Length: 162
Image (cartoon, rainbow, N blue to C red; front, side, top):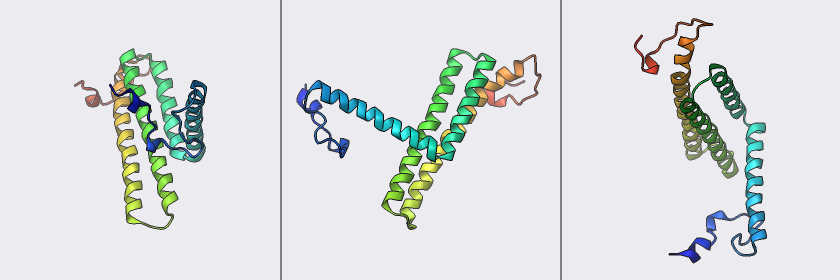
């Protein structure tokens, strides 16, 4: 119903290198899409190189993936793990974006900037705790039933009673 409005460029989508990303030929628009991917990969590289917490989260995600493969977890369990891992990684990326934006505004102490950084860090903590609970609910039943290592583990988190 509004095809012309859908083609209008958003003023929030501005980048210094492009005046109007919507106008022009298909080749120019496709190049703009590829440039967007390049920016995303630049952000990913920045995160991995400069954020120790991102490297920790990636290490834990790798361990969870290896453990899931070793325990031969099912497809629905993989879905939960993937959601948990990607949520933590995405929230850590957003936390870094908030920190970088705040640092660009001012390096001196400002209570509002401190609150913004603290809330963003708190969001990572919430996501990480939720991911840990999801991981426990996926892995503990498999570890309890493993014959090769009879480990006595609490099962109340998994919904079992015994």
